[in-house]
Length: 256
Image (cartoon, rainbow, N blue to C red; front, side):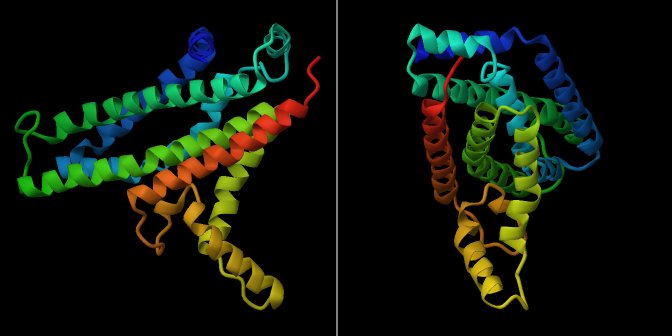
């Protein structure tokens, strides 16, 4: 698996258009950090915490970067003919997407905070304007938010990988992924059905039962606070479920 993963990461590093796109993204993040630098350092950390949900929308481009066109063209045929287990192929590409995503997240943190914090801390790096206790509380809140969101990022990457890898129509996976995030999770988390009789009752019960497993769960107002353990269980559940479906579909697919 390590050799396969290394090969996948090397192949991703050769895709210049994708790297250029991520560079533009990081430049935009740095610009956002500059725009938020007018706030105090604690406010900057709170602002970055507020934009963490954007990472869920980056999972699909990461999955596309990891897969390239391998799920529809020659390289995948070569891997299967060579005798690589299909589970290794599927999981190897998923792990490549996750590792690239972790690197991108680290660079995003550097791009935003590396620009915003020095400008916000007018008395020098690492100093706080105002109450230092407030600054420590802001760091702690951001750290907790990051620990909660990372497993959900991985779960989102696993869902995106399933769609990219399993669907043959270009663009269909993206449409399904973003429709699910924009409407599916919103409906389950924030919409209550009234006046529909038994159908509305069933939908409300289903929504209440699925709310703890939503990728966007921590970000809907009115929902109970999400603890770290729940986030890691949610991420693991998404990875396990989508990987089981993806590997099963891949094993049934005829590769030509």
